[in-house]
Length: 68
Image 1 (cartoon, helix red, strand yellow):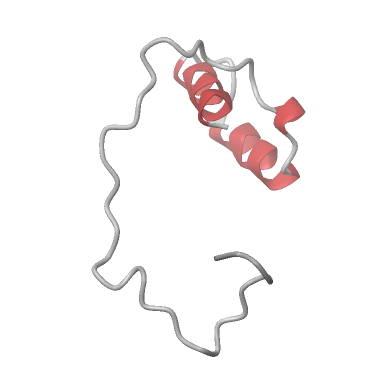
Image 2 (cartoon, helix red, strand yellow):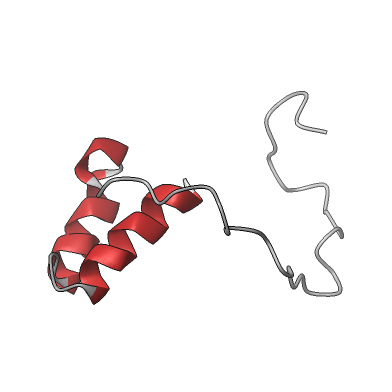
């Protein structure tokens, strides 16, 4: 998924796609609408920020059976 998003954003930066077209692609929820995937070399996760309470679940949350 990240490679599809990066490839699409490269097309925006290269002026092959407009931001309006990107919004339409995201709204379609169809990867085939996106640009070609970026190559995997050089793409890596640097850091993830979670709020301090990200694992504080409450009884009223409806998670699918077997999610945890």
